[in-house]
Amino acid sequence: MNLAATNESLAEISNYLIYSSMAVYTLAFFAHMAEWLFGSRSKVARTAAALTAGDGGQGGREAAAPAVTVGTAGGTAVLDRPKVVTRATGGARDVPDGPGAHGGTAKGDLYGRIAVSLTVLAFLLEAAGVASRALSVQRAPWGNMYEFSTTFSTVVVGVYLVLLFAGKNVRWAGLPLVTTVLLDLGLAVTVLYTESDQLVPALDSYWLWIHVSTAIFCGAVFYLGAVGSILYLFRDSYEAKLAGGGTPGRFATSVLERLPSAATLDKFAYRVNAAVFPLWTFTIIAGAIWAGDAWGRYWGWDAKEVWSFITWVAYAAYLHARATAGWKGRKAAYIALIAFLTFLWNYYGVNMFVNSLHSYAGV
Image (cartoon, rainbow, N blue to C red):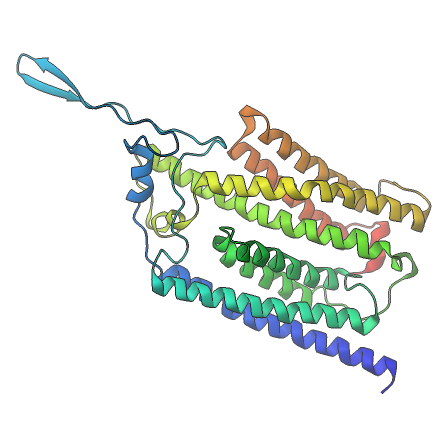
């Protein structure tokens, strides 16, 4: 069998593996849904009690003083001390984490473990598909938008699984993860699909391995940070409603109550964004060096360069906001989401809708 036929066979195998991973991710999606549906629905009283508890032994919350008794001519009036809500250092209320999607039940946990196992299998299939694509043309498997998308979703799931098996509390991200991965792969195999082919000369450089691989990894971590920020906003609103004496709806009771506390989600988003920000800085520098080699200038205000820098500025603003007392909590989370939207625009919008020097890669 000649080399060209072997390459075509590997490319076809890659396609089969990607489609197979999508099928398994779909099964993982339904397993995650079953985890949420069949897991115990925790009671609102769990968080409400933490917000108003008189136990001074947790998180520095103040113990409620005994009721004040006031003598009157007609009898005794009891004046309750106002309820005190103490916030954690991150600006979120000091309440315990929820039990998780499984609701602390064996049946829910079983579905959750099945979902994780299916996610691992889908990840292995997708990673094999990406590797087969690379072998089919003997180069890095991110020379166009289709390859970038499949590699990106593979790395996202890989980072999630590493954190999960490292003992981090991230199983709450499983359902949004497989949902968005399915959307990404669906877009990749339809709108963005490109036949396996060799690179144009400008991309044929060792910097492709360095610059694009770091950009993909940074985007994967930024994605997890964005999921954490979105869920933080929902959970924070839920806790605020309870603290204000309101009664959350049935959805909040069965879903938001099972998530980690707002403080935990806020801390997770901050830590992952802060950890990967230096690598995003390196990504921009590496791209500038590659541009100098390929085009004879390090910076030319090309659309891709501009939006990469805008993304850097947005995340720098987020990190600065977290260090500024008046911009913690929800305000900082909004900035983090805006920053991730700039990354997405740079990822999809610039390549698909803007003419730039980076358009040669095709979609």
